[in-house]
Amino acid sequence: MIIFLTGLPGVGKSTVGRKLAEKLNSDFFETDKIIEKKTGKTIKDLFDIGEKYFRFVESQVISEVIGNSQNSVVSLGGGAILARENLHAIRNKGVIINLTCSIDKILERIANDDSRPLLHGDKREKIHSLYIEREKFYRICDFSVDTSDLSPDEVVQKILVFLSELNKIRVIRVNLYDRSYDILVGSKIPKIHIINRIKRNFPDIRKVALITSPPLKYVELDGFSPYFYIKSIFEEIAEIFEIDLPPGEHIKDILYAIYLWNKFTDIGLKKSDLIAVIGGGVLGDLTGFVASSYLRGVRYIIFPTTLLSQVDSSIGGKTGVNTDKAKNMIGTIYQPFLTVSDISFIKSLSKDDFLSGIGEVIKYAVSCDKNLFDLIYDNGKEIINMNEDLLKQIISICAKIKADIVSSDENEEKGLRFVLNFGHTIGHAIEASNDFRIPHGFAVATGSLIETKISDKIMGKNLYPKVFELVKSFGFDCDFKISDKNKFISSLMLDKKTRADYINLVLLEDIGKSRVEKIKINDFVSVVNDLMK
Image (cartoon, rainbow, N blue to C red; front, side, top):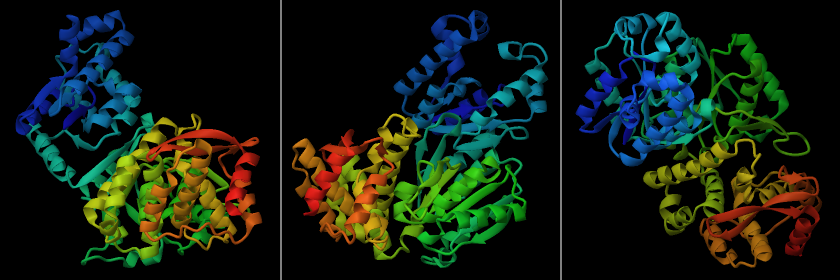
């Protein structure tokens, strides 16, 4: 594990870093010291040449440290994380601990230190300016400690407590520069991972709008209530306003959005406050849409409660409501502050709700990850029995696949994100033609199977038999049943992946490997019609 320490000059990164490395029996690196050794110049001399040159060398050094060390503590220069490539690299390769400190204490610590080129002149003003410039990046961390009134040993002890809880969860990164966020996956996720992040990012928080559906309040497993556990987290932070909405797809409607906007106004929710949603994909999509538009954007946390939402809809920021014509026709892309996927909720799901999530997992396995395909193919029975270790592994793999794609193509401008729609073009049409009586994940499983057959026909492959075996092994209907052919074709024509007179179709090169091709809509519909005969 590589532990990166971030923070302003004078917060104690070097002192704390050395002591922490000793406790962990790890190597300790200071990037500024490495830069001086590498260039043969002081930091001041390098800044005299130009800050742009210094930042270039700094990025090289960070890359080298990441590539050459496994277990280490790294004290980063205060401005290192302002570079997108540095921020994403350290997030992908390690744990980020942010040290904070009051300006008065920083001034006291560096009173006689003139070696810092960015602090020449009025030090208070300079530190304040650096704080304003960097604070939003410092907040992107796994854990934060205020060192103002703590000794270095006390700071180290707090970090060690956090690290001891870290092995209980998996952390998936969504890297979007200053809007980067994490997905936490685990069972009974320790409060420290959530409370510390909220306090660090919402210093002026006063209220939390907690949105859920009443049945979720009564989920209990071996005496553990996930809902009230989450509620207790927010009770330590702010005043809670619980907002209950009924379960069901019908709430994904503009009328319920208006209801929530009015509720937020009634409770006096501010931009400095927080919205939290505990629920599945429908509730998450609605809440995300409302959060994105209320006061032109209030930050929100998602606690997805279904397998389907944990592996798919809670990741990537797609929000929206339905219209009479089609699903998700009105919406935004608005990323959450944090996604917390607690497996405890999944164990309470009905068989159909659980299998609906498996339908999305199959999509990832067939189109994106051969190892995931083999994992679920070989362990179907244990997965159906909700083996916790397997669930954690599967959710983490799916979340990582989607997180990486979203990080590279958030707004579908490069076409990479279209891969995530495998199985959905046919799946959505199946749902529409059956008046949405078929669960979404079931439709996606069948859609993945049919789109494999279409892909085989276009690509000259024979992957269908293997995918058929997998889909059938989980008990999904492998027959292509359409109740209303006109609705089915109409849904295909309205698919969000259509552009002008073509559709972006995901084609399989092999199991776990796919690419997106532009296919004439009429040609695609013709192929589908042939399958329906």
